[in-house]
Length: 167
Image (cartoon, rainbow, N blue to C red; front, side, top):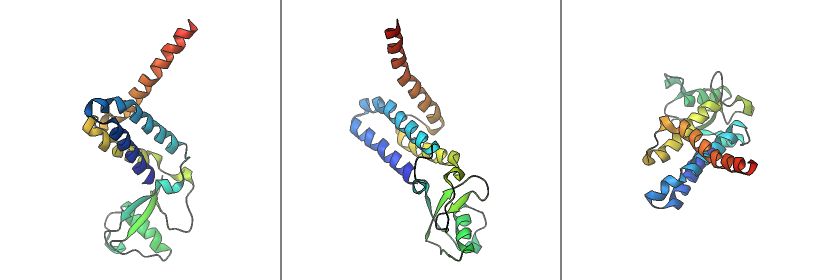
């Protein structure tokens, strides 16, 4: 997913600029701000549809799929319009709300951005972020509260300054 990959790369670049372990934790507010920015972009649908593309490898022939995985569903959508994929090829798709839950990218029409399953994309973004942050002692199950805590800590100094000016 391009926007997820870019976010993960930006996170690694931030950490790379920090250098040693003592300065890594100083990056946490900036990392949280990056994640908040990406989530806002995602929820505002300001990213192009191409940034939401998921690429999966087709593992078997369509008739051999037993479970309707996203790759199987997208492969079936393409087969319905005469495009066949063989095992080993890749299928690009968007994760959508409702049934069937995916939209093959190579269909002759694109779904509206409002059809995207943003909650599924949120999970994937946070899971990718967690792989970067876990070595810093921040597990995936604490990522949501980390983002909120960092936002609160970022806002507090400004609030104290504003209150001091008002007094």
